[in-house]
Image (tube, rainbow, N blue to C red; front, top):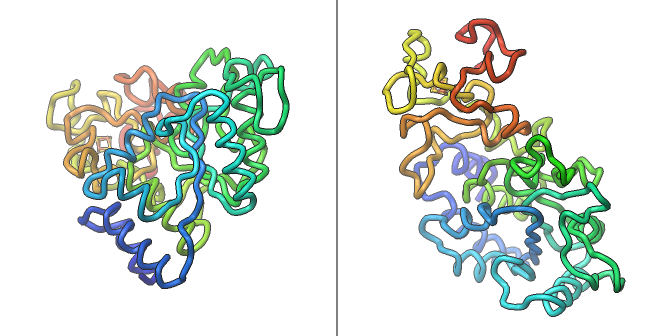
Length: 320
Ligand code: SF4
């Protein structure tokens, strides 16, 4: 698949994108005689929503994702092992694939109180024993060994709900916790399965994707929700819904589509059938780096929830 076809598939295909990507990745790995890439999926402070979202991908199914295109060497959510056996598995996977494996981080990294809001074990993969092995120390250790790092979900990218005010655990996104700018951020609460698969496919087939200033692939996050929204004509005519459940533009009901970057209006969710505005509720901006604090109160218009927003908040001053 040449790059233009890949880009078109990701940005304007009506097909089951994840299924096509898996097929193309299989073909690519066969032709290049490359082994499946080792992946360590480490869940930090999270609700497992991004794993569940990926496993709910339409068409390919979990088994096909795991068996045909990646060599999943570790996943807190899926593995049978627990306790010391799981930590040994993690250590073996990381050291055996050092410099090569893709580290996928799901969830935020708590760093307050020396990381003790997230204790994984009392015996670490780094050979230490007798002290708390924290999420922060494991992610730092894995990050130092990984070939590339992908943060999946807004908790992993920028802290997300885990870092919402008052954030006593001092939770951070992966890039901030590791102090490095080359982390690929797949935002979303949760991330759409196509976003995760397209990012992994890009990384494996063409190298790291182009990123915006928030570290997000521009293929996915290049435009605002507002730009492609099916209710945009109502916005342009100044016809606004007074609350959820109505058919007009949701701006005055709290929609943050004008400042949220994602392809939800044409990607759609739950096997490509719906997305929030189509279901007559406002976009709450789950892909924004400041989510959720920057989106609350959810059902107040932008000028109220973000005092710096343009006065009046309608067409004037909103970049679309
Ligand atoms: S404000 Fe929200 S509902 Fe209205 S057009 Fe923009 S994205 Fe769509």
